[in-house]
Image 1: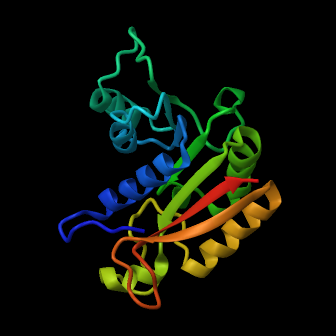
Image 2 (image 1 turned 90 degrees about the vertical axis):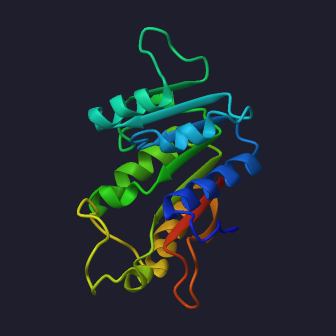
Image 3 (image 1 turned 90 degrees about the horizontal axis):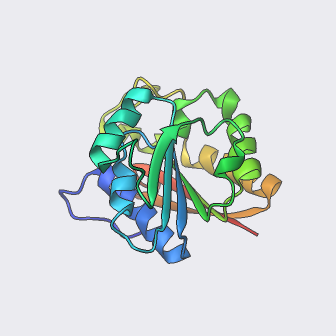
Length: 204
């Protein structure tokens, strides 16, 4: 995966990677699952290829900030974009039929025991053609100066090594009729990969 210049942030690199994959896939409708303050949607909106963009989050304050960042008015709906309260752990028929879904640094914020709920909701219920999942790479934590067992953010419930992420993603793909490929994101180092990691699931 192409990396940015030395002054590019890890956040920028992740969004760049997701944008590149979405464009290459030809996706027109995209779900941002756990959209937060709308950073990804802001990058996607200027791209004419994306004709329908929907973000959901359970954090009402973040959603209000997203509406401000994206210039959304509840009284005058945007023709191509919306954000609303919702959980990617819950099956919602209104979120089915999309070309692609993105979980950008979100799965590590839920308890690992709830991942099967997310799998059923996203891979079975929503079942988009393409699903992109990014998450921190624990193998890289020493490069960031973190002690053994220390996590990057207090809200992270877990952080996976590359081997753990690939094992989980491979099982999800096999159970739900997807193929999966992996990318290192953020200044890869020999033997440990990049600061973040991405799984690209494609429905078969």
